[in-house]
Length: 226
Image (cartoon, rainbow, N blue to C red; front, side, top):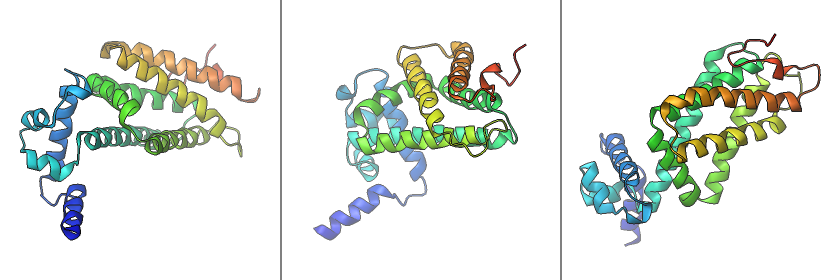
């Protein structure tokens, strides 16, 4: 029995079917669509597999429970967002603080605006279904990414850690984007919202930087204020 349970567990974690990624995504997408119609507690596994077009047994090859499915959805969307930020930073080449901050916030706004209803459910699930250690680990990953972005700017003070600056900036953006999505901000409004967040982030940076570093004297897009 122990050997059989171990085999089932391995099968659940790493399905061997060539279509495993497509099947897993179909289950996750069906789950998120149902969450848009009813609360988590009202969504059943039978409904999920019906919408996904898979069998009940297939569900259990990938996920042990609805809670595990919820955690997987949060984890994978978090990875998508981190990847978008890293790619945007890598694409910048040489940049100053204003250009880097603008690019990072734009990358977030774009990915949220593409699927706002799905990201709304992401933030709701993250609050209720993520394990504390996973939540804190993801938060730290974003802080590390923001620290790297700030320290990589051409006008960041040489030899100075950006850890202290990364915390309030990411916390501001995380809270504001989550609030906007949960209250149902239309995708068309994200451009204006993005610009407001860029100004807020640059203002926060300016308040924390030495006088000789004029990060706050920049507008979204990297243009200097007159």
